[in-house]
Length: 88
Image 1 (cartoon, helix red, strand yellow):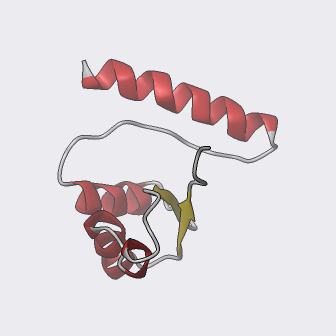
Image 2: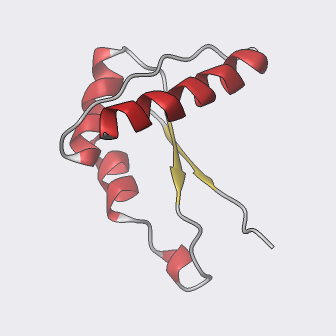
């Protein structure tokens, strides 16, 4: 079930943040992705949105994914995109 998988992943991320001394709040929501991310940030009175991106090729790297683009355009707070490094 998606809710169970979300809870598992979010628990792990919250532990990583706590271990690094970073305050975080996690919750699972379902809906249109970009809209939901921005609404959750507003509801939580977040100072910033940090989200991962898929590792893209050099050519693909010039274009952001539709979710990241949507969040950047809709959010009234800073959005930081983190690109995951490639695996060898």
